[in-house]
Amino acid sequence: APGVYQLASLLVELDASDEASRILCADALYQMGCIEEAHKLLLLALSRNPQRSPILARLALLQLKKGFMYDGNQLLKKVIKIGDTSCLLPIMDIFKDEDRKLMQTHCHFRALTILKDKQED
Image 1 (cartoon, one colour):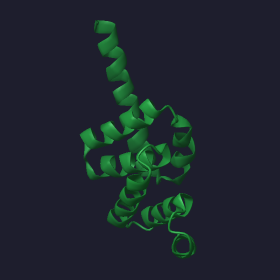
Image 2: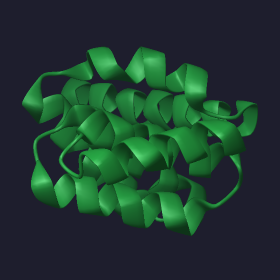
Image 3: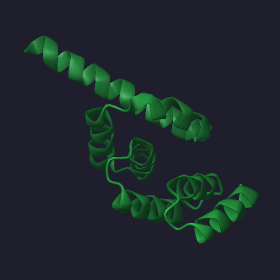
Image 4: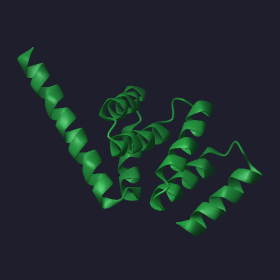
């Protein structure tokens, strides 16, 4: 992760508008345990492109990891509204095991809640 971070940082320096390099930097920071730095970098990337599902999904995980369930839910709702959920599966490979389980459990619980609410209606 440190080598990936250094390479991605250099790529960002060469082209500040390169979103993929910013995401790669954030993923490396996450892997190194630098959650706050990854969060800040993703927020910066989001400010440039607020409709990018890969950024929103990563931010959702970081919010869930911090215990901010409402914020995590709102970000996941945005990903679903955008309609580009294809980013979720590859991102799950990046997440650490405990965070992958957190995201899967949270999404499963929310899905069951939505289905239960619809059945009651």
